[in-house]
Image 1 (cartoon, rainbow, N blue to C red):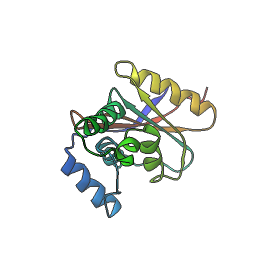
Image 2: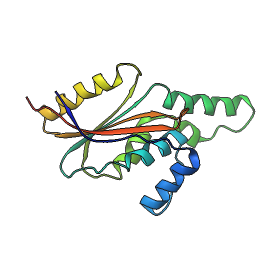
Image 3: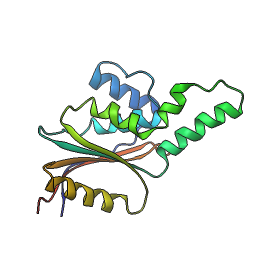
Image 4: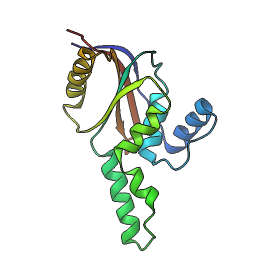
Length: 157
């Protein structure tokens, strides 16, 4: 069974998340959705080891809320912006995060809530059997400003 190597709980509002990104990266990456900014700002609190690492983003509604926000803009008569749609796509969030750590070998987004950590730990174990020793796991709740992260060492047996 996987074991937690590092853990960090973060409660950040939009201003704090952007300040953390500016401090760590020198600038806030452009055209990110709020959910992605929150995820990246929280993930930067974990020291990611060298070697192949997996990345799992878990959220009950993160990308869904970004999609609903883009649709609400359209319903309100605002022009539909391609960035609004792109910010709703978990793959964009994963690619932005993977760009910070070239050792990211696998990445996925899980839209679930109650059993998310259990499923993610099982995935980390499966990846460990395939040579990905560590997995960076983040639970993101933009409504509460939570960006909680753990680094998991997977069980290779």
